[in-house]
Length: 486
Image (tube, rainbow, N blue to C red):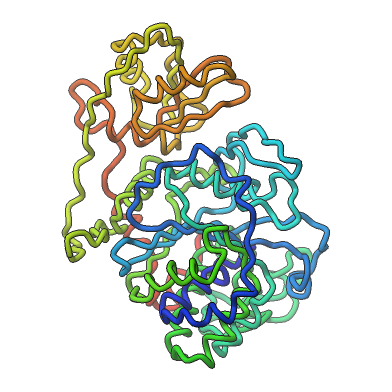
């Protein structure tokens, strides 16, 4: 689904109102998905803030076909993946978009019959939602994929579909948007064969209902007609929606129909399956100011028609989120009553001495899953010094590994645990196709492991590149600013 703006609505209503009483009326509308498919080898829960994965589903089941067309029998897909981090100071938030065509590793995921797939490398992230051919999609698989990609533990996952979107935008009497150029029917439907009637004139305008849905879905005919440009307009739409909610006031007359429509179109993870849990989560968010809500896109580049993640820039974003630092390097942890300061200097990445482990008799292959040069060699030397036999040292198939992974074949679980002890924080899992034990080194090891001799700057950066921070959009930004790409 192309509607990231819809997806965040319930959260955003709570952010600006703290009106917990709404949820008592909405309790009957809370829908949840099963967490049976959530991976066991998850990243550690180390971030003081909270991470919320927001997915858009284009399922045509139920009332959705009235707005989107298509067959109700089609498997639900997802074209919107947004990772929102709410900082521990409860005064800042950032939402990072991951383009639908981003090439990632989709790990083992649960299917409808209870079996688990083999990991797939170098595939588009939106394919994770379709694993197992669930009618309403597979949010657990996408959550597993995002956790593997970022090394961040996802605290909550929320899925939204088409239904209820028209009512939500109408509840605030429409949303102010802007078009960088005139858009015609043929832009909405490239198969139309002719330009058709004018749908959106160039410049600012107000949309609601079906027209709002058309706005957030449109991709063709603007800029390079890519999903990247559409993401920019979706982020502008969410920002404008927030402004509309604040402008309408936080009265029950406004909030109740808005929240009712949102709740009916959303599915929550089991961690948000009750009014009490939603209240506990939501009431801590009400003090976030519009200017302190930022929207960004993971650092990327084109790889043919697909999208590749740019490293080490992306890992710097994930590291900042993990440490509760904003994109412009403010400390937003809220510790010791400390006020965030734009001039705050991030702590230097520590170099941790490897723990003492007896690796005698254990054979292991070591592969560098990052862009940090020489990492596999340094890890191999560390393992050899502790008695391990290193059978191979090289480069992994992907270089966007966030958290170090120890994979092992059947019957090697105990030895794998010993290997993992040499890499604090590493994930451990049994993997089909692995004949022994192998380590895929992640950005966490690049930041804390032994440095190259004479090289003080081998690890991933400890601060987000200036360009990423400068390109981020604030929720209070001009609705006509930065609406396309290419």
